[in-house]
Length: 222
Image 1: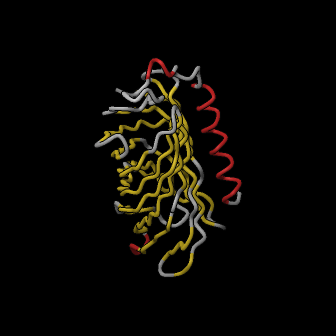
Image 2: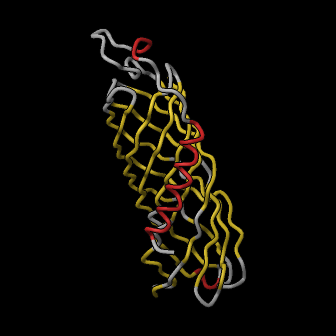
Image 3: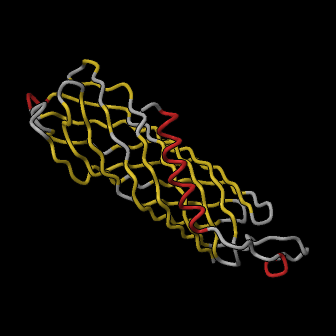
């Protein structure tokens, strides 16, 4: 499956979650700012969201013992929790929390390992409200930990995975449906390299996962 098909798949997942949570937009009279303009996002401190996300690896530059290796890492769909704190009406910090299970395969060897990743990501965001609609962009840092791995005998087993740092880019939007609740669609791109050592002669292995994380859900703000 190419990258465009993968992105389309995850966008569909996010869209279903957004449509499931959509309701009637907040009334201007209920959320007007001091100037009378419609502003459901004024004086916001916290925004907590529950999302369904698709993690879509865009793997490349795989290596095994210094030679190129065409690793294949499957997609994953799971729930996610994120917490945003607003420093101002326009500037926020967002932390996402989820675990992500994946199968890793090699041509000719089949599945070589199953991994469970914990990839907390912190982003600094800029928000701009247009009535109920509030798009945002963000940039931040990801730290990925391999919580568990179950290697096969195909390449001798995985001896150790290294934790990894990566850069995250983000864009998305929230849409207010009343004074507290909103729906959300969010897209992140992580630039992430994963390193491991294979039990057989402790051979070095690595791959650039560079996943897309695409999802949608419901938010509560206060």
